[in-house]
Amino acid sequence: MMNLTPVKRSLRILTLAATVAMLAACGSDDNSDTDVVPPVDDNGGSVIVPPVEDSPQALTYVGTDTCLTCHSDKKSFLETNHNFMLNKVLEGKAPDYAFVDRSDMLDLLEGIGNAAGTPATWDDVSYVIGGTKIGMNFIDKHGYRMQGEKSSVFFSNPPIATSEEGTGDIYWCGKCHATGWKDYTYETGDNRNLNRQDDLPGMGGTFAAGGVQCEACHGSGSEHIKSPSKTNITRLATGRSTADLLAEDMAFGKPVACGECHTSYTEGAKMYPKFTSGFNAEFGGDSLNGRVPVLQESQSNDSGRIAGDTLKGLDPDTGIGITKKSNFHCSACHDIHKSPFNKDKPGHENAVKECSECHAGKKFADVGGMSQGAHEFFTECKDCHMPGLNHTFKIDLSHPSDDPYYFGDARDANNKPVWKQPFNSAADSCKKCHPDDYDDRAARVPSIHEK
Image 1 (cartoon, rainbow, N blue to C red):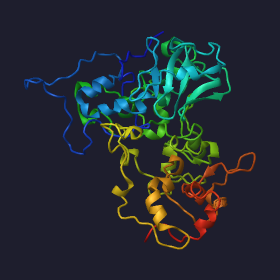
Image 2: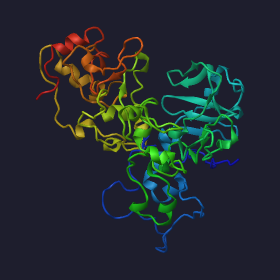
Image 3: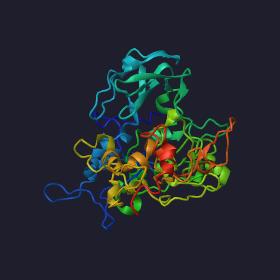
Image 4: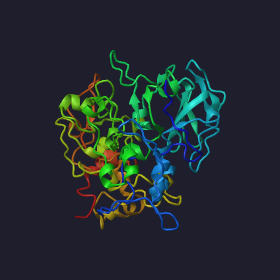
């Protein structure tokens, strides 16, 4: 079978997120009609176009290094989290991450339940999932995701290994961790892709490159590199449809929108074999994103992962967007070619816009029951409007936090609400600083900001 993984170099191990961007533009980010063209050589001679071999495929991936030949102002992307979402282990060495060394993380693993056992060296690991911001997971030499007593690393201080029951899970996450992913088509009679990456039995499909690269968000560059034009590359992806994914090419080469990945697996994700999301199965249509699940305390910081759902602002009972930002694109605030996690590093300044750039002059109200000065000097907008990294933004303190007003009608087997309304309650926005009396405080404050 074919080995579809390209060879990658040192820092550019994962050649290009939007996060999942997935978010921002190809080349210059202005809205002019002038096409971005390749550079001219030093003598003012012919235009420099990197050589690309002809291929019988309708769409092929040219790789991030090729994109950067023209779009050199986007090279900071190589240092972002998206670039390192899936890293191949080469020559028995840990992946080479930007700004940080993770070579000793393997020492934390114990009691791996996979048939391959606990890895003794990096030669026993085929790929690493993540490794820059929150943590990292490991794929064994047979392509299965490692599970067991201490199988995942969480970057606390110091880093610790956490457990996950299992004996090795099929790796099917490449839809969002890789570029050019095609599911292994296991259904009877479905011969669209009978290959597994690197011929590893645990791989649930194939991909063109690890990580969320340029072409994950902007689409295949094979036509664009031959004749650079805004008409043969996608600036902001609108998302692949169920029909796209059911097609013979399984949407290979088409751009992936942020919302295809920044959603919960049960709601917005379109999974093989039907490629119909849970949200669309209930409400019809062929849209992106879904309702916002009620997160448990242990999931309080998981909202960034489902940012597309919280930003979409859907009423869980009608499926209709009801917030002012329901039609926003992630790039309204994010520059996916930069890393907010590395905002103190050169080239990553202004990775995320300040709220005040759009909401200038907002001041806290001087009202009874609230300390104007404390809020002014000790809080940021995101502390209250984006708790747990959610992208709901709106705060509504009109009811006690456990009131049905804040939830959808659906209940689970324990009669607990399943979905949230797309706005924050006092428990969401105030509890972190006022753990004992957040609802009482909220009830005494008629308005947080001056009107």
